[in-house]
Image 1: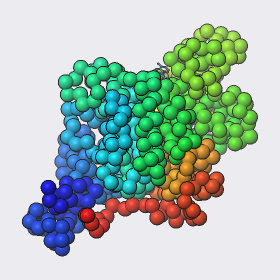
Image 2: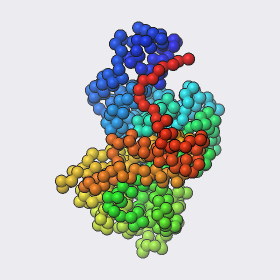
Image 3: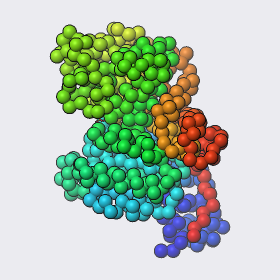
Image 4: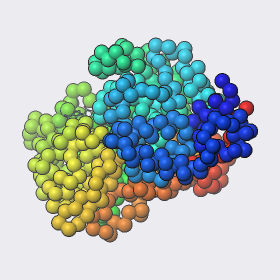
Length: 547
Ligand SMILES: NC(=O)c1ccc[n+]([C@@H]2O[C@H](COP(=O)([O-])OP(=O)(O)OC[C@H]3O[C@@H](n4cnc5c(N)ncnc54)[C@H](O)[C@@H]3O)[C@@H](O)[C@H]2O)c1
Ligand SMILES: O=C(O)C[C@H](O)C(=O)O
Ligand SMILES: [Mn+2]
């Protein structure tokens, strides 16, 4: 293959019709492109018109992924221009459809690394090959056991890692050549996939136990060795592994679990936003987590830390929580508690009829929550009766149905506003339209970790952080305050996605400052703002050099 062909097929170098005549000459591209030289703006206008002609959002996604596969700079230039429109297409919820149809739709591995549990000796080579000499600063890895709320999707789940990375670049400005999406294919327990002749992953049940742990360990150690500057982001692991992996590695390198910590941050930020509107104190709230899994317990821990910073002891803080899972309200003697759940159980002696507290309706009636968070994967479970019961005991009920994708949400924003006569303070997992009710227009915040992880990750990278602490997470959760004008009727509890780039920058600076304040930077850095500015990549064509 010639140098010219390699350049045109390299999405990190390719400019397509934007190569100038001089570049075409120098790189041996003469005659390989139509004569006209286009600006990136002209390319973007033409591409956007094609995008608009597509019949539905999945077709639009496939078109955008083609541009992504061919020319990263143009893709991110377009995404900058159409952020609010593109977010639900390249990310949640349309990414969920793409994952379900990954086999049928497959055309391109998208520069991801595919690690197989059956070939532990290939882990290093896999990462090295996929990086292809690029200076990797950010790795997003999934084993796809818990893709959003849709369960096990095997190798198909790689799309969530790619999607999370797209949001990183669009929101915070990480150079797309410095990122790596990783699929850990540990097998799958999804019978539909196993029976599908087109399935592209390992065709066996999920491997657990030592063989699994060894591959994860091998993977983390290889990341440390091959990409010593990189931040490692874990996404959509199963409930049993997510917390255990985080606990094992959090003091070894800069790493975080997005479903635990990213979600904890965005929910705390949303609650702080809601309390700004209601003028209430966090210390007066009663929290009910419905779905006490990875996200539910991550959220509870983040709020618990906040209560402790507000002066409560750990024991006092825990008294503010009720966790409900499949078994109903979680008691200290409930069977099958996860380690994370054990921190948030109640005692049967607190209730007259504890044996009746086996469902959400009964628990809401008994404990009168002021904050209700849904991470249960159970659609429609925040019913009108439950919401009205909750709203009868608090002026401004805070209700966040967060399960993704759209079909799994515990409630719709519009219903929550109506059932509470406009009093509910709402955030949803996926984007929601504004709701007009009795003459007031309610903006609905998107309670999605995408509001937080790009700024968090970028700040950690800019500051060359050695690890992520609770102190930094807390600083980040507070960074979004003041962006929304909470005096407006119908104000949202979180800032709009339209401002994602703006507030990711603020967030990154706060995070970087927090890292420096704790002395957790690898490199000598004195100015957090400058470090963030220095790392920022913008989508414009640079000089192509090719050895
Ligand atoms: N909006 C966001 O930013 C965000 C972030 C993370 C997760 N989520 C969503 O939250 C949901 C859960 O994700 P996760 O990673 O915590 O998964 P998980 O599997 O770790 O947790 C789900 C929990 O719900 C429980 N559950 C299942 N059926 C239930 C029922 N009928 N009643 C009560 N509890 C029940 C499960 O036992 C489990 O503990 C998913 O839909 C995911 O998309 C949203
Ligand atoms: O991916 C998302 O949209 C948010 C979150 O990480 C989830 O798992 O639902
Ligand atoms: Mn997730």
